[in-house]
Amino acid sequence: MNASRQPERRLIASNKKARHDYTILKTYEAGIVLAGTEVKSLREGRASLVDAFAQERDGEIMLYGLHIAEYGFGSWTNHQPRRTRKLLLHRVEIERILAKTREGGFTLVPLSMYFENGWAKVELALARGRRSYDKRQALAERDANREIARELGRHLKGRTGRA
Image (tube, rainbow, N blue to C red):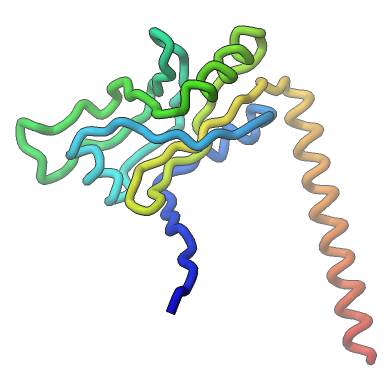
């Protein structure tokens, strides 16, 4: 019985506004260095990526502004909710990311945080900020695509109903 197992992926938090405010060019999966009470709090789903961003510090990529609520049953060992956390990436990936961000106009934005096979991971995006007219254009395009899909669905339902 050699059944292939799909990797278990459980979402903790996502940053929906990031996809609206930025044009996503490439995504990376990064591990994150956490304290014990942070992991327990994440397992309860108590995290927010709203103001989070990543930057380089001493040749490593650090995550700033990630809010992980204090663990309810923690004692004096509890963590600080908004501390800076180190992201775990391969050296080659770090070099590529830093080369792009130094180029100018690019930033690192966390898109989501999840558990994969028991390990906490962050989906990090290399992104470029959108201007307001780009955002309006993206919204109009999304609405048009939704309307097209709706009409196509109506048309297909009409055909299957007659046959």
